[in-house]
Image (tube, rainbow, N blue to C red):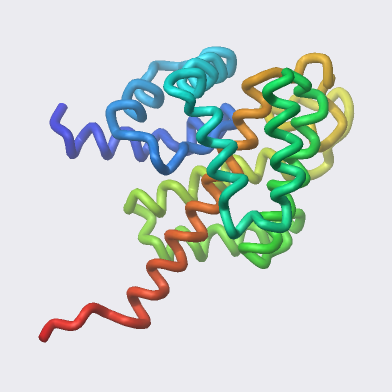
Length: 215
């Protein structure tokens, strides 16, 4: 399989990975993505373990948190993110997880100006972003994977006894004693990806408004 085919196969599986509760970090290299998403029928636990190991290497988890703390787009939430960083280091995951959900919810509302809790409006928003980015492009596939992730996070009619996939912490249907490193990393990474997507949108808008001179 050539590089172009590998890249295409990776993109087509981003939504599958999102079903496991993970949005791809936009800084991850293609070989790393390939190792992750081209696995046959991975389990939720396998994906969680892969990301935990990935972020334990080369100080990646520290860099992820520091990047969020230093982001100007997240200035409003910086104190809370700093506290989450300390909680993460202390393995106080029960404190870290709900706080990060608050940050993610707030960041999406502020940056994207849409009511993601409204299923119809949420669908229209993501379809517009996917179309604007070209559905077959890398950015279009990224938007599609984020939609899959968010659709799980904001599921309708959440109630005890119903079968769910992932991301139930915010619904009060996930046992806090089961939250661990992967739960926190999943949310930290999601916040980072939301900010990165917003930056990509802003760059695209600037390029369309101020095209490079051909003279």
